Length: 284
Image: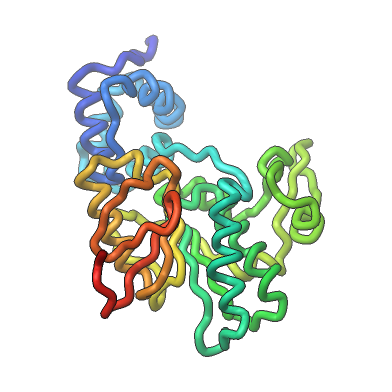
């Protein structure tokens, strides 16, 4: 029997409604072919003959719980690389981290949250930058948390092994100091060294549904190119959650196309970089 891989209006509406409910990602009518293409492999793995059978599986409460992570993993966009948007990292180094060099990291550790971290390039870049500035940081003195809703990407992040092209923007000394060249299944890979990995933890987190994952308040939150997939209402809710995770005076970094975010506690410093106002600081 030939599989029926056409996606009906009814099934498409059900799937995109479920995806929006679970992740906040809004799929327009133009995304129908993309969704169908990304789910075909999942249908084959489950030995299903049609998208309608897949929707029936997801309508079953017991099966939905197990299958939702797989659905989410298929529709998230995960293209990224190390040291992406260099100006943000330069701002972090110059305006934030360098000014904390006298900080007692034992009693006041630096906390950075990378929300929507994909396969880990951003949090590892943050760890490299922190290591350059705080080479003698005590254990736990710099804490970087990477979170994502995609469990497959988190698995890659924890593994910490990347093709050469992902390292293309890194300064040459960083490539030499923080990676070991290796091979896997005949492919050249560069694996993050254990000395750097100790700065970073990874966790699954839903930005719209889950409470802030940072223990205490974060000094900085990076959430770049995540909000663009949400509706305006869900963008507002996500920003509220990000701001709640920041300490007063902390910093929020968004994607370049997300720089028009408005929140009464946020002060725009430069393109897509915001500072959370102090508790007694009036909005301007």
